[in-house]
Image (cartoon, rainbow, N blue to C red; front, side):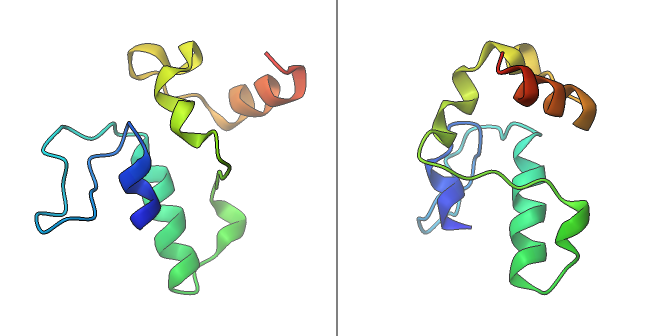
Length: 83
């Protein structure tokens, strides 16, 4: 879960309080859920997981502006077209 402390849309922090003090973006729940499933033997076939050194740019991507949460189809369509 420590990787979430580097995400600008997460409020998780690797400190005594365990938080940045800011409100978490609800989309960070998907990542938290997938990490918990991976750590505890859950079914990863029904989870979306993302990785990479550019993950921090998620909060700057206009596709997710104003808290937009895409459907899986919208996300896959975007990945396929490269937009």
